[in-house]
Length: 128
Image 1 (cartoon, helix red, strand yellow):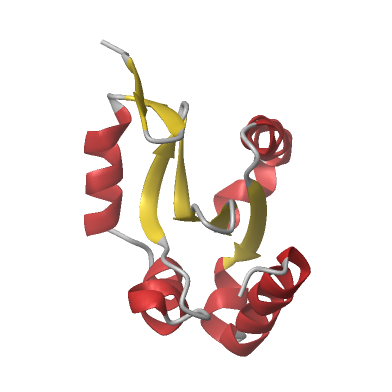
Image 2 (cartoon, helix red, strand yellow):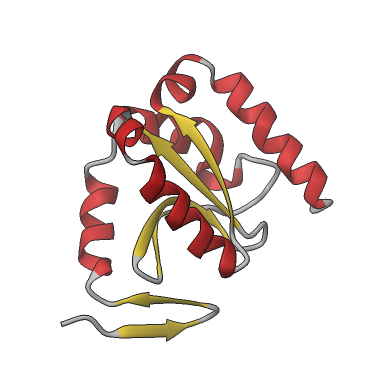
C-alpha cells in the first residue's frame, strides 16, 4: 500500500524505502564511481549527499538538500525514456530540486569533467 510520508521537507511514498535500500546495495559501476570519488564523506566542497533518496514517487540517485540538487546517472536504458525523464524532472523541479544528469560513460571515463560541472553548479548557486 502506498502511503505518502512527510518527514522533513520532501514527501515520498513509503513503499520506495525498500527499493531505495536495495538500490544502495546494488549500485551500478558509474554510481559507485561518482559516490566514492566525488560525493561520499562531503568530498564535493563539503556538501552532504545521500544515495537513492526517495522524493514523492521517484528515487533520485544522489541528492543534496542544501543545494536542492538531484544527480541522476543514466545508462543506455534512458535513451528510450527521454519523455519520462523530462516529466520526472519537471515534477522534481516543482519541489525546487534542480536535476543534473550524467551518462554512465561520462562518470566512468571523465570524472574530472563531472566534478567541474558540479562545482560550476555550486558556484552559480553561490553556496560554498
